[in-house]
Length: 141
Image 1 (cartoon, helix red, strand yellow):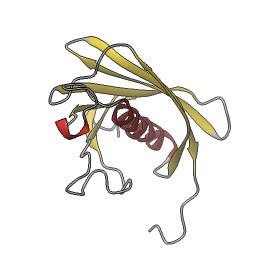
Image 2 (image 1 turned 180 degrees about the vertical axis):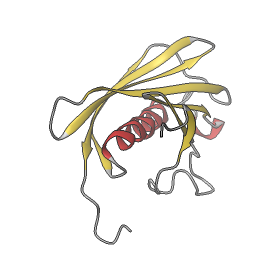
Image 3 (image 1 turned 135 degrees about the horizontal axis):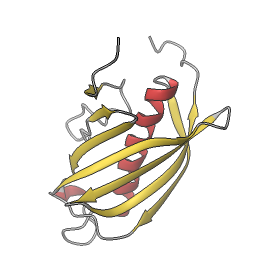
Image 4 (image 1 turned 45 degrees about the vertical axis):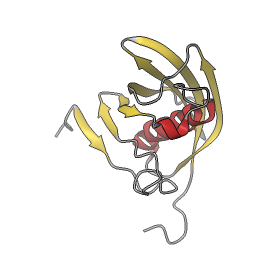
């Protein structure tokens, strides 16, 4: 039976980012071979006024890239490398469209994942990452 084309991807705790009161609360949906999210960066994470700090943008790329890899590998993954290219300022307090997909599974230990963030159809930043498979941690289930 085929899975629905568009459904929320529920991941185990990722450092509490999704459920803690001060967490990022990024939610993911699977659409075909892509993981997507509409996420607003709170003003608390600004760098220059009105613009997101580059570190928080990189953190969100890490989150959605791991979600894309988790969907392929299983839940337990970690980032080995993350490269971000900032093309335009990323605004805070604005609904942004995030998307990630696996671009290579050729290596036996990791996946290559590309991700983008857009606003109104304009790409603001992109990332490429190597996401490694991890065995089930002791006591995880």
